[in-house]
Each structure stands twice: as structure tokens, then as C-alpha cells.
Length: 91
Image (cartoon, rainbow, N blue to C red):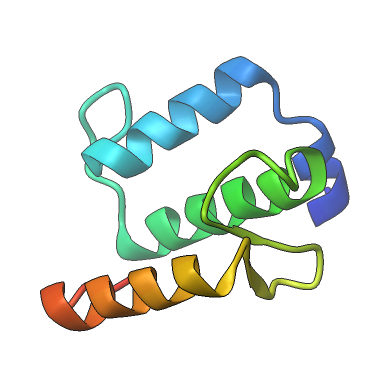
């Protein structure tokens, strides 16, 4: 299965379960996600969002090429300040 096929086949139920798994760090049956699984799921969800919800009102989105896009410079500055202040590490 190609990445395009995978993204196209994601139903709302599947997206919800994957989102929940990333949020909780475990599958519905309680098994912990590995770091690799978590990263792969987040990438798949971002690709789906870039393809099907490119302008969903978020301060930033990931476009089809994988680049982060900000709605405006002030949002970008706010997020950068939050990152510096709270030392957020994206995994």
C-alpha cells in the first residue's frame, strides 16, 4: 500500500482512534505505542490533514510538501515564543 492509498483510506473512525492513541501513548487495548509507531501515526495524520483540511483555522498547518505554514507572522512569533518559553520538544 502506498502512502497515498493509506491516507485516502483513513475513515473518520480510524483517524479518531489514531489521534487518541497518540494522545494517550497507547493503543485501545492498552499496549504502549513505540516511539516509531507514535512518529509514524503523527506523520500520517499530518499528511491527511494537509490533503483534506488544508485551511482548518489552525495557527499552522503542514502542506503537501511537508512544510509548516503559518496563517500570519504574529501566530508564528507567538508559537516560537511559546516554544522558547516552555522548551517544547516535538517528537
